[in-house]
Image (cartoon, rainbow, N blue to C red):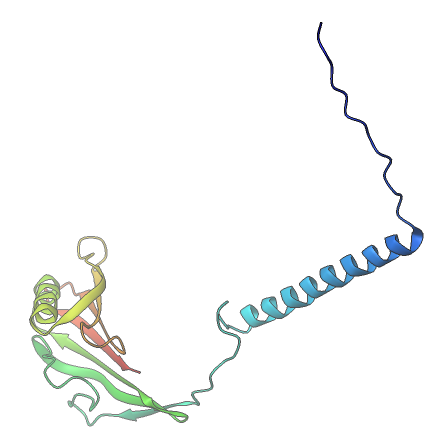
Length: 181
């Protein structure tokens, strides 16, 4: 003989109208709070603030100081060679009004060396001078533009970007951008 167990059900209380209204008000408050936070976050993203940053920092306007003709900018690292330099086409330093820490240098020049030579030259220079290559792309076969992006191994607050453009006459144009922040 099998004994069957049947649980007994106890009657549940019904919510009173007052309790239902209270639960509704609490849920409405929670949903409203979530909506307000979502709108605020969306506005911050539209204004360019990343998700983990809620305020923008005003560094002021960029002030450009052109270097004398044929000269390299002052902020550029002094030991950085301009491989095969054959005339500087652009050279300037920049700083920002509200931040004396941020310094920027740009130099563009024509090189008598071929683009592939310059690309390998700067890879070698980075290695010998303790700069770490963060990103690179060698694309001389398909269009002729390549770049190297690096920062010093011991200092994350400096960046160097070198863009090399292959010319049809076996020369190249090089743009070097240096940023210290």
